[in-house]
Length: 165
Length: 376
Image (tube, rainbow over all chains, first blue to last red; front, side, top):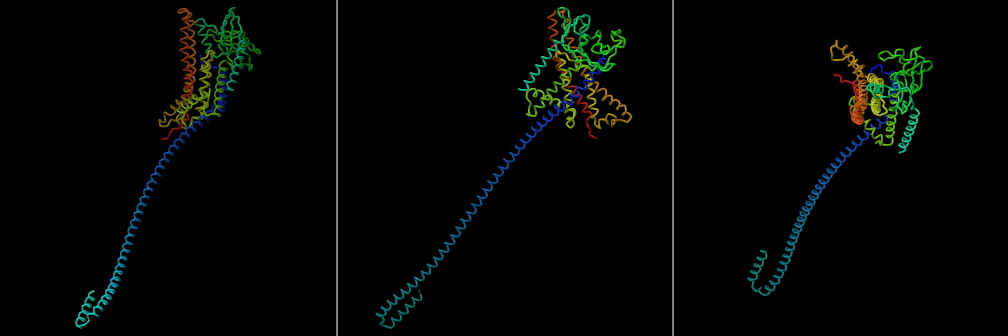
């Protein structure tokens, strides 16, 4: 078979024209929209995947944040509680101290006043005793003061006792 | 559903009109000693028939038979013949040749005598009334004329073009309303993706492939559909026409030459890193490679594969006749049936493979031309 004899210029020309027309028509009505849609779809899928990935990462971040926050809150609470405990301890201790001081002071004052009262009482008693004794002495004296010597002795004795007391 | 119903209606109308044409087109021919490329009994007739099939045809004949009354009947329809003669454009229907293919029937138009010899239209020289042949069976007193007829191949191209346009414009429309196509589109989308992701992207490169997608897709589906149409009993042999493959190869050539980058021309014409004396020789070799060898390999590969496929399938089918004496009618038919079936299945694969290879190599050549080298 003779290839070059078989070559038909007319067929070649018709094919050329049809192919060019087909190419132009397909490009406009088929390939462009198809390829664009495919690309759009692919980029859409890619974006969706990336978005999902981002969302997952964000979720992770959020949970990490939450955990961190909870931890911090817990620590803070603990610190606060510790502080509170310390403060209360201190208050109690202070109160105790104060109370002690107050009581000591009270006791002291009480003691002092007791002492005073005692002194006063003693003084009163002494006075009474002295009056009584004077009274007794008077009576005794009235009775016994017959001799001068006895009188003197008595006075001396009384005085001695008095000073001793 | 509406679209489907419409297309079914449309197809029915097409089918009805086709059959009415068929019945009108079937005609009889009493003269018995003519070669109409329809009878195959002997080896010679088988060879002629295969050759006749491989060549383009001016009729769309489906089959022919001899009736009980001894008449030759041809079923098919005639196609317009459009030729550029010495007296300008002449058109008539191919039925005027009465299916004759060896120059015996002369058609007279505007005082011109036209004959059809082996699917080519010849114009007889002045004064000649009959075509006379020399020993090598070439016409002595007639010459070939430019033939723009709507031949069987042109019809095939138009059908393929229509199918591609119909299918893919439908797919394109689907994307307007939904992200994932349904029906026919779902079958076509992976093919588009295949061409893009397996052919264009790896060979041309991520940056530049987009510009060439329309051409690669068109060529891929054009060749594939025509290859497959060649396997139907209608008997197209479009991609086995050298004119078709030449046209496709020239398309690829023009595309990669017109898109050649600066680096491409540098490397082709003045190869850096080579002794200066060798550079012109290399330039000649490279130019020959890009302008001649590469397109030639493209056109010959497709042409030869399809021609060979058709020849072998038809040859094997003809075993049915040749082995009749040895194996009987049933045996010969069985052998031929299974071998032909086997080969046809292979041809279905080849139909895809050749479309793939043509597109792939086109993409590869384009990729070579548009590539930008890293400067060291």
